[in-house]
Length: 345
Image (cartoon, rainbow, N blue to C red; front, side, top):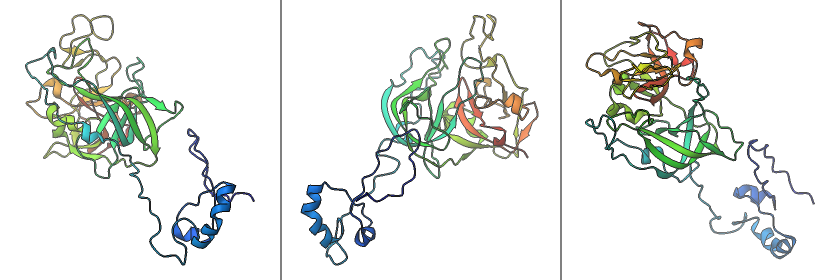
């Protein structure tokens, strides 16, 4: 007798899922909600009378007692959450301007499950192959602090897996507090938390709710770090009506906290207190007085070509809000994913 068709659709293309085995069926099986199991011919001969009496695994229509019950596992997995492994940078040292003697933690192994991909870096803003990072966030209707991170140049399992925004994945790898490039560290023991390792698919349609924060939160490393890697809706300063661009976009050297790259890139040997940022299209946001130049947050073209696709980041431009990923590289940035992330007044 041919096995009954379970009626399941085709699996996700990048996976080869073992086809479920069919088995005994009938009104009692359907009523119980339990999946029948195919047995061998010998087992069928031995247990068919019992199955007929009980009507399937568990009790039949006329049986007594509770049916068997297997509790469902957490669909987001039983690994750690980003909010469990990330936190404040207790190792900051304002006096260590070169980050020469930092007590930042060493890289640690992590297994994080159930994170939603909120952005994928497909745009090479520097022309040097700087793309391929994933931004992931704990899957939650209401995002909390320290629940986002960058996954730096991940590998995939299986190798031909291709994840997209909205996919829910697991990360098996390492967490590192990156102090900055060897050519010039971030300074004062500031770090960028980064995950590396292997991404694997868990399920689709994860929650991608931007966390609404005020621009005030990005004025300093101490207050901005908790939003790193997260999808946020950046709103004006407390008491202000709009986000205001206070500089024309920079395309060469930008102010920053690290040393200048001295050999033939975008910076010259006379560059002082600047960071080479070839082809970065970014502009400052008005955060008022009293904020160091290196701490002024910027709109950045890390995730798409703002210069070509718009909007123009000219001095005086105003926005009601900007949605994007909070990133860090010698200063904090808001990185929109497309021009649709800009809300006009």
